[in-house]
Length: 117
Image (cartoon, rainbow, N blue to C red; front, side):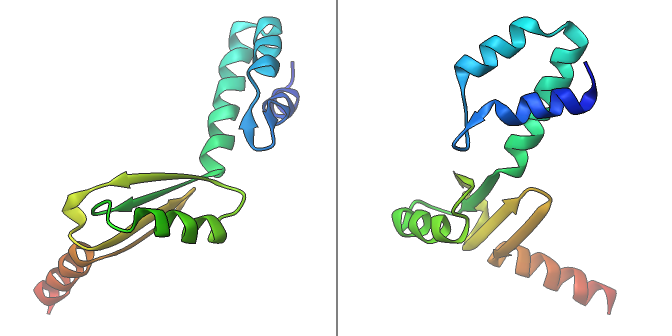
């Protein structure tokens, strides 16, 4: 099977933005080992593009944050993580874009800037 064919199979494995187990079972049974590896790689790539990981320092106001980010990223799966080392602020990873607005990041960048002066 061609790479484009396997890529299309990975795309149709989703129903309304979620993996459809029935489709996956039917597809995987018919693929050879090499094609199966490529199929899984394409599934992971699609999942990576459709996921936004949001890291916050604590659970305070988590419901409001979920509601806020679901409006900003309506067609993406939101994954929330807790990382107390952020101190305050937030880190957002959307595919290849990473945004960190935290006290820790500000302090680290400030110290680097003053060391270069």
